[in-house]
Image (cartoon, rainbow, N blue to C red; front, side, top):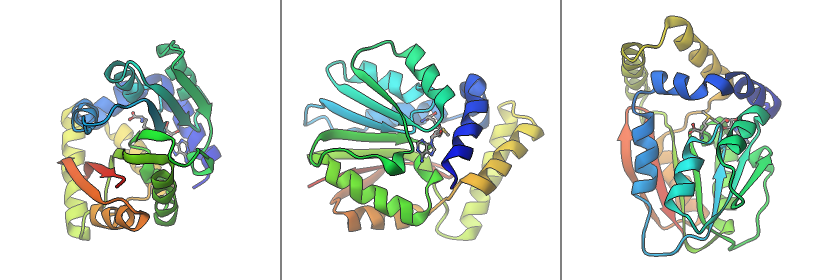
Length: 227
Ligand SMILES: C[S@@+](CC[C@H](N)C(=O)[O-])C[C@H]1O[C@@H](n2cnc3c(N)ncnc32)[C@H](O)[C@@H]1O
């Protein structure tokens, strides 16, 4: 993936992003709600990292859910990051224009790492590397939770997911042009890996408690906890 290209793609979409994603994926808001709702509650959360914050839809929810936390948000799209900054005029936030493949954090420094629809922009190898880094950055009992698009275990399952996604996107008001725009983007920038592969990679990275608390077609939320 070329980070400049993906940044440019999301720069150009940034003003319309929320309307487009809500048409394209009618259960987007439910997915963000579920990502937060299923987080463990047995440990205080003081330090959060969000990867690929985009225009800040999840960041706003994090700010409300964790009023005492410091929150570092990272995105490669300057325009999206600016919109996030405008929405989140809050000294607890640190905004960083950066490719999250080049990110560094101190070991054992974070309580929570989250991401929504961003990790699938990485290749399989890059995902594996990121999962190992996140494991290192998290404090003991820290949580990594990401919502994303996943390939099916078979090509048939995957194509059925795409088929139903297309139908639902159209029913929610997307146009053929908008659908084509996403499919072109997908061909160039998206690297869907299966849920089971990614669970294996999380286990390889050291995570022990791994689950999928929510799933709908090719979207799922995966939660993994450091021992
Ligand atoms: C589909 S948007 C999701 C935005 C937001 N998280 C949401 O749920 O609506 C993907 C975001 O990830 C960012 N992104 C993709 N790959 C990235 C990378 N390697 N480093 C930093 N940001 C990245 C894009 O710029 C974009 O803002």
